[in-house]
Every structure is written in C-alpha cells, then in structure tokens.
Length: 435
Image 1 (cartoon, rainbow, N blue to C red):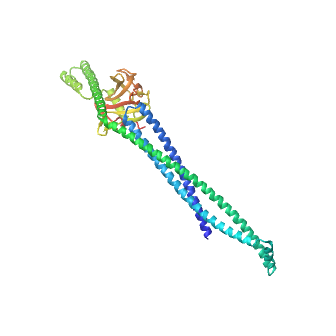
Image 2 (spheres, rainbow, N blue to C red; image 1 turned 60 degrees about the vertical axis):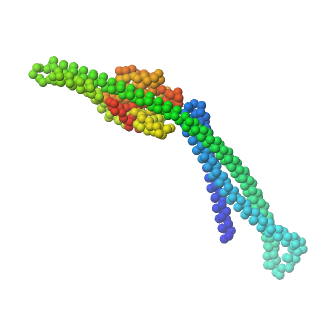
Image 3 (cartoon, rainbow, N blue to C red; image 1 turned 120 degrees about the horizontal axis):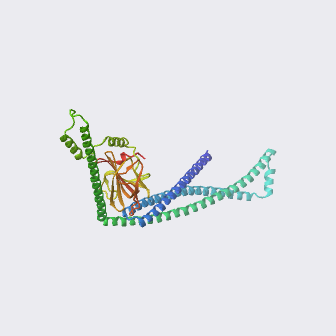
C-alpha cells in the first residue's frame, strides 16, 4: 500500500513538473512577443524623433514602450517564480534519492560484511550438508541463489539511483544558471525602465514649459478654421442668394409670359403682387427650389446613411464632428463643422453625390476647397492640393474633384468634409455609409 502511495506521489510531482514546463514555454513565447513589440516601438520612437515635431506624440509612444517594459519585467518575474518552484520540486526529489541511496548503501554494506564473514566455500558446503533432509537442503540452495540475486539487484539499484541523482543535480545546476540569467535580465530591464521614465519626465517637463506656446499655436489654427468656416458660410449664403435671384427672375418672366398669353378676363397676379413675390424669393435665407432642384434635394436626402465616402480609402477619423476636447490639451475644446478623414498619401477626393460646382475656394497655396450644390444641400471638400473641376461644372457621384494634400508637418493626408442644408450643418458620419 505504501509503495502505491509513493508511486502516486511521484506521478503527481511529474505531472506538476510537466505542467510547469508547458507554462514556462508559454511565458517564454509571450516574453519573445513583448520583446518584439518593444523593438517595433523603439523603431517607431526613433522615427518619430527624427520626423515628428510634436513632443506629445513622443510621450504617447514613450508611454506605450514603458508599459511594454513593465509587462516584460512582470513576465520575467513569473518565469523566475516558476523556475524556483521547479527547482524546489527537483530539490525534494534529490533529497528523497539521497535518503534512499543512503539506506541502500547501508543495507548493501551490511550484506557485503555478512557475505565476507561467510565467504568460504566450506561454510557454504557445511550449510548445505547440515540440512536435516533433502527438502531443507533444496530450500537452502534456493535461499543462497536468491541472496546472490538480491545482492546483484541491490548493486544495480544503487547504480541507477546514483545516475538519477547525478541527473537531478545537473538539472538543478542548469536551472540555477537560468534563474540567475533571468534575475540579471530583469535587473537590466528595470534599469532601462527607470531610464525610460526619466526620459519621459524630461519630455513632459518640456511640454509643460512650452504649453503656452502649443496652446497659442492650436488656438491660432482654430481661429484659421473658424475664419474658413465663416468664408464657406458666406459663400453658401451667396450661392443661396444667386439661386433665389435666378428663381425670382424665372418666376417674373413666367408671369409676364402668362399675362401676354392669357385673355383679359382671366385672373392673373398684379404687377405689385409679382414684385412682392420676387422680393420674397430673393430675400429668403433658404434656397427656393425649382422642380428640378427639389428632385435633386429629395434624392440626396433619401440617400442619408448610404452616401459613398469622399475618399476611396478611409484610414481613420482624425477629428470627429461637433465639440470635443483636444486630444492633447483636454481643457481646450475643438469645434468641428464637419469631419476630418485621414486617407492614404496621394489620394483623390470624390463627390459623394451628383450636383453642380458652385465655388472653388483658395485659402492658401496648398489648401483649396470645392463646394458642390445638390438642390438645397451643399457638400464641401477642404484641404486639396489641386483641383480637377471648375465652377459651374456638373459632377456625378464618385467623380474625382481633386487631390488631397499631405501635411508637411506630420505627414498625414487629411480631407475635411462638411454637409449642410442651406446654412444648417449636419454630422457627415450619419450620412455616409458605415464601413
């Protein structure tokens, strides 16, 4: 029974060791993955240091690297702990083998001494001849054979136990070396982590020092954006006024033609009524739609949520619609009348629906915008480095209207896109189809 319990304990210990080896392997794989991510982050950090002017971007990447370093240290600590547990189990096995070997050696030594004392052939012969009968003599012969076999078995077992003990001793030496290596690696990573945190602190201090400067730059850009929005609003109002002027003129001509073609006894609007109606159309702040314009506006509205994106490939939404905190300075609120869409370098902007180009706006040598009218809806495509349409052109859905500019500051290619009905702006994300 005790032998069965002992075997069961050995089996449990073996299973535990196998389980720990498997876990150790997984941790080693995770550690390799983290180290790969650290190298990639380090490359990105070096690239950013050379190309990026934004210190905040450096801090974000540095923070990511610090987190990865902390994960690496944590993984290495887990490896060290598992190795310590494995070494503890191996040490228990060594202690057990040493005890068993000691008992075997003592037993074997006593056996050798006893054999030595009765080693003469005469003693063995006398042992057999002194048997009372044949059966006893036979049993004594069997006893001597078993005794000899037992001695051989004991010798073999001692040899096997000694080999097993040597193997465990060699294994624990290797494990001690591996553990020491992990401890040294961890210490190295801790020193590097401390260095990374110090560098981050220097960067953070530099941001604090120049915060007023950055805030001033951001506010300046916000003012420029508001000025552009105001110019676009003015152009939309001008487009509304022009459309309504044409509609009023068309209405006046239609009444005049009707007056000439209608008998005298037929009721027609008086001249004063026509003038009043014309003034009402011209002074409207919203486009008075013609039959054709109404069809176009209704079709545009009917496609809400299904309009194609103004770029063929959208990388990300760089800045969302509406008011939201600045990504770097939370106290600063950004107001976006549209949505800023990041795309690939060299990408083209395209019309999201059929319409007429009502304006080409040049805000700077590298920032041009195109405004397209769709009934009483307007779409505006800003931040174009070049334009491939002209004012008055009719455009079709997905037609290329220009090339999106790539910023020299951060290397990003961003198109600002707005949708409005007359002068009321909407969130473009709810009009474009979900990607």
